[in-house]
Length: 404
Length: 218
View (cartoon, each protein chain N blue to C red):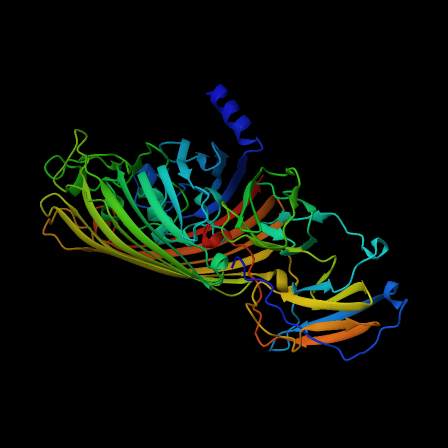
C-alpha cells in the first residue's frame, strides 16, 4: 500500500501529469439524531457536531501517449463504509485531428458530465460545501463503469458563438441505482461513493423484515446484478462562455426481477436531466438543474417516480473590492412518488432545502467557507420510527480547505 | 478560420513627390482602430510592404518572438513576426498543453509539459497560422507571418505605431474577427512624414471570452 502510494505520488508529480491535492476539514453543527450512514433517520452526512475530514483527495491526469491520458481521483474520508479508495479511474483517448468536429473516448469508471454544479476537480463544487439534492444522489449512486464516445465542436475554432458536444455510453454495474431514493429519499451532502462502497440507510421494516423484502439496510451502488448493459446519451450546447445547456437521458436497462445472493435487487431506473448555466457577467454564475425519472424493482414491488430541481447563484465579490469572496445561494426541491401497491413499503417523500454559503480565498492554496442549510420535508417510511413523517434538518458548516 | 487572411484594405494619402535623399529618413505611422460601435479594437494587424528596395540599415530590430501559455490561453492572442523568425513556445501553466496547427502556412504539433519550453519553431512562409490546444479546445491563438519587416498590431487602446522609412507601401490589414472587410478606401500609401490615421471598421468586434472549466473541455 505504501509502495503503491509512493508510486502514485511520484507519477503524479511528473511533468506529464496534471495533479491536484485537496484536504478539507469541516466543523459541523447539526441535528443530533443518527444519520443514514449509521442506519439512522437523519439525511445529513455527519453524525455529530464536531470536526470531520470532509475530503482528502488526489486528482491526477497523466499522459500515457500523445493521445491517451489516464485519470484517477483517489479519495479518503472520515465517514462511510469505504474510507480510502478511488471515485474515478479512466483512460481518455483524445486524438489530434484537423477536423473541426473532434472525437473522444473515455473508458473506465467516471461520472457523466451531467452536472454544472460539480465542475471543480475531483467532482467537487466550486461554490458549495454540500451538493444539491440531484447531485448528492448522483455522487452517491451513479457512476459509469463502461465506455463513452463523444463528438464535439468548439465554436471558437470555427468562428461561431456556439459550441456543442454529443455523446453516448454503455456500461455495466449501476444496477441498484435508486435504492436510496426509494428507501431513504433525497439527501443533500458531499460524500461521494467510492469504488466498491456501501451506503447504509434506516432499516425500514418493509425492507429488512424476513416476511417483507428481506433485503439488507444498505446498498452497493455500482454492483452488477443482472449482467445487462445500461446506456445514456447526452448533448451539450454552449453560447460563447456565457450560457450552456446539457441534456442527458439515462437508462440502466436493469432487469427489475433480478436479485443476487445478498438479496440486492436490480432496479430499472431511467431519468432525464436538463442542466442550465448562465453567466450574465463574469462575477455572477446562475445555474439550475431539473431531474425527472422513474424506477421499477421486482414485479411492481417498487414503482416510483422521482423529480428534483434546484436553482442556484454564485457571486464573486472581487469586482467590488472585497477580494476573493464568493457568496452562493441555492434552493432545492425534490419528490418521490410511490405508484405501487406494496403497502408495507411506502416510498413517498418530498421536501425542499435552502442553502446559503460564503467562501473566502486566504491564499491561492488556502480557503475558508461557511455554509448554512435547512432541509425539511416529509417521508412516509419514517412513521415507524418517529411521530409522523415530517422532518426538519439544519446544518451549519465551517470548512478549511488546502489545495495544492 | 484558416486563410481568413489579409484581405487587404488599401489606401492612398495624397502626397506627391518625395525628395531624393529623404528615403533613408525614418518616420512613424500611427494608426488608431475602432469598430463600428466606436470601441477600441486590439489585435488589428497592419502589414506595410515597401514598394522600393530596402537598405540593410533600414531593417528594424525585433524582440524575441514568444507565444506563451498562461491560464489556458495563448499569450499574446495574436503574434506578428517577420518571415524566418523562430518562435518560442513556453508553458507557464502548471499543467500540460498539446499545441498544434493545421494551417497551410505552418503545420506543427508540440507537446508542452507543464512549465516546459519546447525547441523554437521557425516560421518561413508568410501567412496566418491558427494555433490550438488539443486538450483545451477553447484555447486559440494566431501567428501572423509577415513578408515585410514593417508591421504593427493594435494594443488595448486600439493603437499601433509603425516606424518605417519614407516611401511607397502597400498596406494589408488582418484581424481574427474581420473577414474580407474593405476598411481603407484606396490601395497604397506614400509615407513622407510622421502620420496619424484613424480607421473605423464596419464590423463590431466582440470581446474574447476567457477559458472556463465550468463549460467542460469543448
